[in-house]
Image (tube, helix red, strand yellow):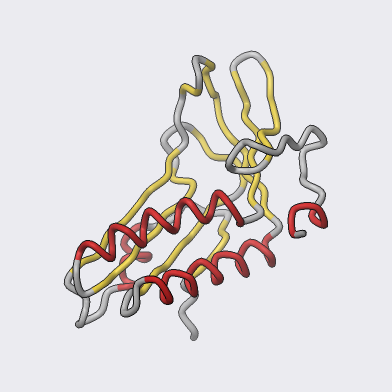
Length: 157
């Protein structure tokens, strides 16, 4: 069975499984990033979040990020898993693992990955505040999605 390095899942993400995907004999460093659901955002209390994604395009964009990382930091290996569905406070929404021969490339590539996820991966979230709910829009929070979902044609142009 082929190992999937880039996934959108509905179940909790397992860090050890993700790390195992990038563990290699030539790697001297593995960095991990875990993006979690926080309780407070700009003074408003979150009860829980819902993430949705256009899965085929989201996986394609995660693969693109992997290709970009390979080009920028040769000899690295990256695995990214993003969770969708209902997530409670402190649940992991995204995990990234990067291995490389040396730590600097692993740190840089990992930070690059989360920034690119927010820029190009079609995943959006709905905040369930203690006083209501709001579709947040794109992950950079620059494009609102008042109807709950993006216009995919606009997002990909």
